[in-house]
Length: 544
Image 1 (cartoon, rainbow, N blue to C red):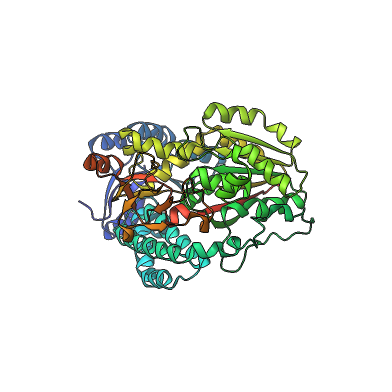
Image 2: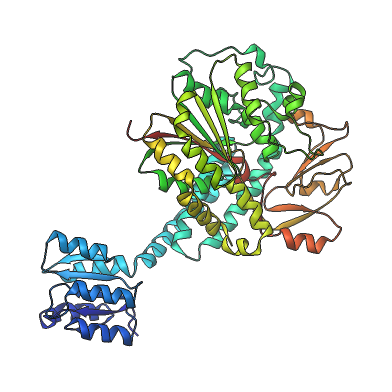
């Protein structure tokens, strides 16, 4: 077998191409020849080729006719048209028949070689190049991880790791395992950073100096307000800051804003979806930090209210639902948005839409023109979170989204074919500012950590709260005084614990079954870069 591949060259003047064929054989390609379409089809029945070179102008059956029959027989084999003709209609027909390339005679051997590299060896070349580039950067990435000392440093670490994760995914190479180990090390150090610093982010608030805790002291900001974050030194942009520091400034600039919140949406998922939108929008990419727990009840309610969870419970008890209550935890989002607008003494109008299925998305698209009636339109999309939970329950779906790459691919496929894609097409033709964000991300868990609690302990696998929790303190991040991080405390002795890295909480009862069921599932609520460092993207239509 030829080292570099097996080719079929179809041309009625094949004798004039002997030099080219000898050149290719010297490059370790095996080259079969045919002088007409009939012989070419016979050869295609006898063996499978890596690539076919096809002349268009042949006696009897034309190149285009032969191409159609070859594609019926070997639909995945790349076919390169090699012809003297430069007629546009022939080019169009060939392209319509899904040729891999189109070369005009006379061709030189290097042109042929370039075509072969593009169509046969592209993946191998990408793999080799990506391998080399990652190997050259491994040391730098390791230093970046070890030197990370601030929330901004960790954002850059995460962006770097996601970049290489996506690069190596396409390269299909053996460096993926090394990257996985670097990512595990990064998440371990990130958890240490959070455990050392998270409570410190809120020290000013506990002393009553934060505007977040005294919203009535905040008045409507002038239209000249800066788009830069209004957070203290050492504190990142957090969930309660999003409206104050990103949405309201846009409204003050007289922008019409559409805010789309994808539940449980990670930065890597945004990066693959962004390719679907890059032709229509310009992007301003930013990452911010979700509060703990990285769960909808806490993080998304904090976004919409502009308050930390315990302040929501204190100020608006009718809008807060405790963990032990059976009522849905995110049913009051529109009223929470209104409370924030009222506290900042703003007059902005807004609409609110929750999308749980394709039918709801279709209704939203049909009502799109009504967006013009409001300053702000908020859309919450639950598909990705539903996908994450469904993958846990369904063996078939778990196989379909077997790993991180497949999980991203399913997300992209959904987005591409969802009615929401049509919504973005409409927005690209508008004057709206579009903001895409999320409440939190998720992480693929594999390491069980034993926790014992009473029947009132919540069911989340990445965080627990209760008054009678038993656990190994070295395996969790514990917050014994929830008030320090503005979390509700149903009982005086309530404590919170958070899983970090790829761990998840498991009960000793029926332990093996429990671990087997939840291992290799995507979960959220705890501490990891994937859960806490999440996208905040401003999209501007390119038509502007």
